[in-house]
Amino acid sequence: MADDNAVTLYSSAAITDTKKNSFSIKVAMAQMLRGGAIVEVTSLDQAKIAESAGACCVIVSDPPKPGISRMPDPSLIKEIKQSISIPVMAKARVGHFVEAQILESIGVDYIDESEVLAIADEDHFINKHNLRSTFVCGCRDLGEALRRVREGAALIRTQGDLNGTGDIVETVRNVRKVMGEIRVLNNMDEDEVFAFSKRIEAPYDIVAQTKQMGRLPVVHFAAGGIVTPADAALMMQLGCDGVFLGSEVFDCLDPYKKVRAIVQAVRNYNDPLVLAEASSGLEDAVARLNLG
Image (tube, rainbow, N blue to C red; front, side, top):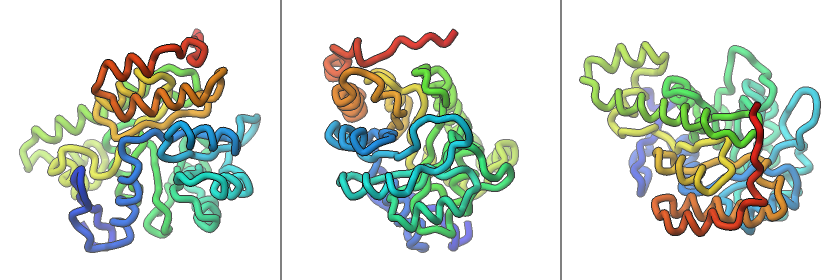
């Protein structure tokens, strides 16, 4: 891999290679979020609730409304940044590098190049190496994830349900697909990796690096349909480094209790007793949504 675009290898403890400092710093910034829950917020009050409940980061988005969805209002982002102490993330449309430039200029900690918003460029993603900010990108399979890493994404979000229905089946399917493809890759001979990288349309050098590490070469979160502590723990046990929670977690009587329970589940995902306690008393906080 060319030094200018080197992907930094890291273990669970530390960064291990820093020929090119800029991307190493981005990977380190993303690694700071491991083992946490990132909560989508649409107002300052929601951001304060998420912070007090233990979220590792908030992602700011506009309230749902008809028409084209774009980056959130910069004034809202500034207000939230001035009022909370945890990192702030904001969404930009796929391919819209000017929205990313604006978000970087107002000091967001992370930028999510989000397919959940309207798409600005059907053929090109943002060249994330051209900006200082740490980028998050979505994927639904291993090839897509590694293409985004080549473009400069330092955190990969395996995306499931986009409609806020609380249905986790698509998220589980996509996470299992990514993890399954990594296991297949791990069991390949070195000579087979060339053909595999061609088949999944991913850069060979990053595919080889994924095989060497036995996981994605950057931090890996899950998003979509995660609305209960059990959902969050499921994603962690499947091998993710953390979870995104949609703004639907605030559509209940006690959003603090719900977000706090999910945060506890992420931190203690292998302890059924803690998960049982976190899941108790949430019947009013978990909507039974009808997908029919």
